[in-house]
Image (cartoon, rainbow over all chains, first blue to last red; front, side, top):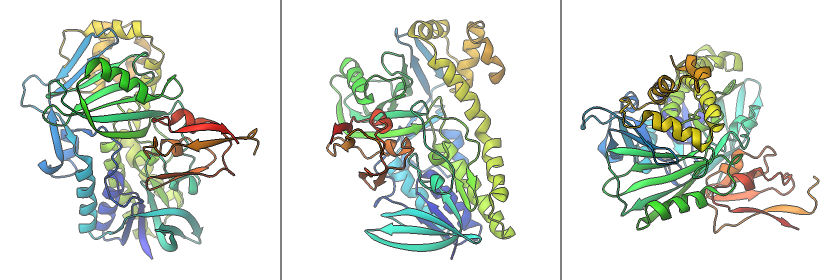
Amino acid sequence: MYDVVVVGAGPAGSMAAKTAAENGLDVLMVEKRQEIGVPVRCAEGVSKAELAEFVEIDKKWIAAEVIGAKIYSPDGSEVILSEEQAGNEVGYILERKIFDRYLARLAAKAGADVIVKTSAVDLIRKDDIVKVKLRKMGEEWEVESKIVIGADGVESRIGKLAGIDTTLKLSEIESCVQYLMNNIDFDPNYTYFWIGNEIAPGGYIWLFPKGENAANVGIGVMPAKAKRKPKEYLDNFIKQKFEDGKIVEIVAGGVPVKGEIKTAVADNVMLAGDAAHHADPITGGGIINAMKAGKYAGIVAAQAIESKNYSAEFLRRYDMLWKNDFGQKLRRNKILQEKILKMDDKTLNKLARSLAGKNLGEMSVRSIVIALIKANPRLLWDIKDLFY
Amino acid sequence: MAKNGKKVVIDRYKCAYCGACIAVCKFNANELIETFVVIDEEKCNVCMACVKTCPMGALAVVEE
């Protein structure tokens, strides 16, 4: 009998397994893929300061560092967010293939058992505990556990098996394609974003540097708004901007942009990361929230084991923790997203032009929106209270 | 289920096994096994959510 079975070995799962194991629990982490960390489904950008709160930074999994962001509206108006001086990097672009394995190793080092090429296919609650049915290479068996942490990604089944409906609507997901490109020209100190209803309906195109003349160039579109597949929009964009670029990797993915969910717990079960729709509805970023949530889930698992209480009621402590930390931001950015989704390209151009030539400093959604509200009070009056 | 003789098929040459189709299926009619998406035709209601979501255009509806 395990204390905790963690399903999924991404950043949320590994942080949960690591934290639970460090608290003395018997932990099993299962990963359905045969290799942890691949295939990647991510643009790999992360805030430097926030990441440093969790792990000692190791250059082995840092592909690039950036000092800011450049955002382009449909007519090409540029908005820059960056620290005043170069050498003051605020963001990392990770090498997720290596980073995810590193985190999984931390979990293993802390004492968690890890098995790969293994799916969790069913949960059966019995008395106070859960039987988790596992399947590896065609063979099925059961393990017993007091708690299950579902960190099984955007396609999470653990939530549904436990009675939490995590199905995303077509307006609650970004459909994404990304190329790792070589032989392209850009300023490697910046991440780039292109917005507009023509180029990326309901989403945006990004460029995240990954070293000399190499970058993740990707797109997210909202299926409820897009008329074509993200790949077509991205190919069009690349033909115009980076015609000579070489594509050395293709990545696809779905990013939950639903915003804060009511609860990420059920009896014996907690969900973390994309499985709990913890990704940000505006940026689509999810790594830090996933790591935070994983850590909180590990902490609450330890408390639950100590109190011998695995009920949803007890596990609500976990909801409290993640909601107090980043739930408000998910709510706020969902409202902002809905506001932006209604804007036509003319409005987006007007907003971008109102900030053109200014450096907004801090690279955050809040700093952009506050500058936008100052320059366009009437247009954004209804959301101002969310940002002050 | 009523499907009017239609079903969802997957083009494995296009699929990038990202799991987006699983995330939008309210019938739990699909599963991503490592890199292999399987569709359970019994459960599938041909609602098109997965077809519209697939980033790669790997899913399509065909007449049976």
